[in-house]
Length: 128
Image (cartoon, rainbow, N blue to C red):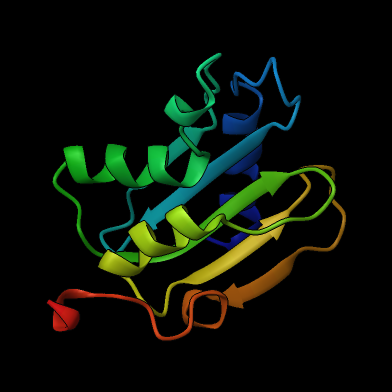
């Protein structure tokens, strides 16, 4: 699967996002090492702390399907951005060097990061 294909899957997930409070729609597509793609979108809640980000929704869907190894994450969101700290930590649990591709879903150039660039010195099992 190409980066562009994964970004398209993230854009489709973004269309399903529920963000009536912020208006900030995010879609994620997580590519498992076996080729499966797991998507998620942000779902807000009037009790803001109960909101879930698209990235964690995708990770949790993949884990629920028995996947634990990932090769790429694509995000579709407007106005730039990158995964929040909580999402970076959850992703790091499974793939500390995960390539992350961020696009706006409208065909503009995308940005690429390695997760360990976004979360250097992440807390992990070795810290327990």
